[in-house]
Image (cartoon, rainbow, N blue to C red; front, side):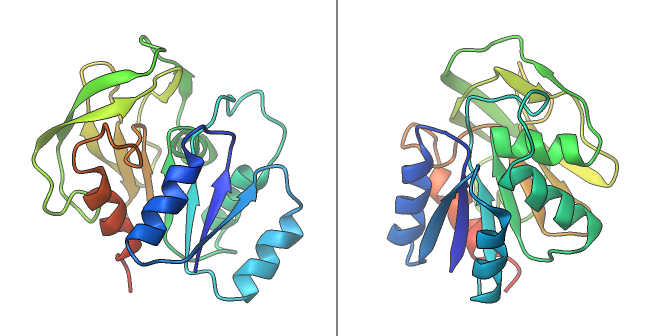
Length: 194
């Protein structure tokens, strides 16, 4: 079973639907739920966590499930594959010490993504593809201990991963149909680190 943390994105239901269409059961918790619910689900066998996008900023949000999960992953209290999408990606970057700032292009739209390193997420995905993005906020660099996997002309870190832990972040939205190869990227994460 996979756990999706809903950070208020209009696309969270698409993440859950994508998981189910790929044959995986997924449950969703709203980001302001009590952390005890996460602990309960972890004890019931959650094997992956996905942090959705959302309209908030990592600097103005009060502590929430995404920030707690990232901190616990960083500190070793949780050990399982973690994927952050948009806001979730920014929360990972912020928690591990990277700077997150306003992006130059805030609106939703299509963007050309350039893959620098295939790694797990981009296995079987072309080196260049188009994706649905929003850059209201974005990581300005990768945190210490992470590698940059992809970038675009308007965002230096469209995707990253931790060098040792199964922690991944993407600024773009693989869950929406506009994103080329989005289903393959989501599937790569869901099937990683078995």
